[in-house]
Image (cartoon, one colour):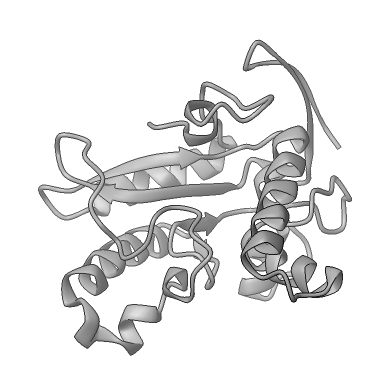
Amino acid sequence: MYPIYYIQKAPNSLRSIYLRESAYERFMQAVSLLPENYSFIVYDGFRPLQVQQYLFNQFSAQLQKQYPTLSEQEVKQETLKYVAFPSLDREYPAPHLTGGAIDLTIGDLNGNALHLGTAFDEMNEKSATRYYEENAEENREVRDLRRILYNSMTSAGFMNYSEEWWHYDFGNISWARRIGNKKAIYGPIEAEIQNNQLKEYRFI
């Protein structure tokens, strides 16, 4: 486990990683499906609203700086490719706010992250899950590592978000829509954070 936003000192980030119970059970299935000599390194699971808002603002500011000619609406739309809008709305909460989303990568048996083509959270066309499927000549090793991640997670019941090779959902509204369900298993969670620990929470 590598709680990346806590390590990056994001305000109100959690020093531990949490998932809903059945999502955790599915994740353990995915672990059992990994080929020998590989491991998972988990970056994030449940994410408090405060952190989601912080990340949304940070990504927006980064895009504005990188592309100063974009309009406010264009910046928002581009930001939404990589960070869900910080919402606890029951109909469409941000995926990580439900405890049913997980960000992770492939590592070796010593817990060292392997290169999967881009950095985690990189806003780049190469972050799209299928980029190296369509451009295999650039790096077949990266393509194969992404396949290992994808096949292990989807075989256990997770669904991938196509713009981010590292993001997988189970039980939330994003997962439900991708499998054709009208309803999610998990709704949003409202949390109180103290000293980077989960003090109180309630299901909405």
